[in-house]
Length: 235
Image (cartoon, rainbow, N blue to C red; front, top):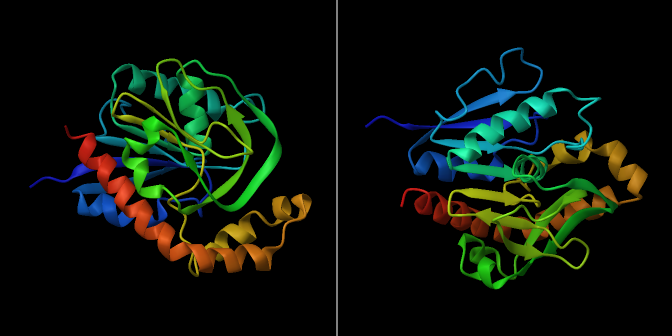
């Protein structure tokens, strides 16, 4: 049986598929990373992969002048989304999808960093995100977006209304980070974002302790959520 292909566009090395990798393999996907900075990282047919995942990164979708690759990723996503091909965006990836669908992306004016639960909408409770009900998930962002045309709002927090959306059954955007590994690998997040954490006045030991506290339940719920969605895109 030939494996299906999942292409993951990665902006910083430590923000990878994390705990989503095993469920993807279990669902029959072979994973291929495409890393920003590699000359040919977008040199693939955007329609061809069975699944496209656009991962996070510490930049803004509105910073095309500083980071010209952003415009190229948006154009790639527009081609893929117009064909309604299975696409998952996480944090920056969700913001890129929102922009590609015609929504505005902008600074929220706050840094939402840390573990807290989501408030699921009726659509969220009827979606694969139901597995995340009452689970503290990892938030790590300062930007937000307007709900894209034709999309359903799935989740919110008191600080940020737009935490997840779905357009149809195959396009999913997650503002938060259910995929983040919260064991030893979480140190990569703490070191990689050290300047941001210091500027926000956040405690690294507290974040580490919360990762150990909430990580096991998040990993179980996130695996169930992504597994459910992967079954849904096959329908």
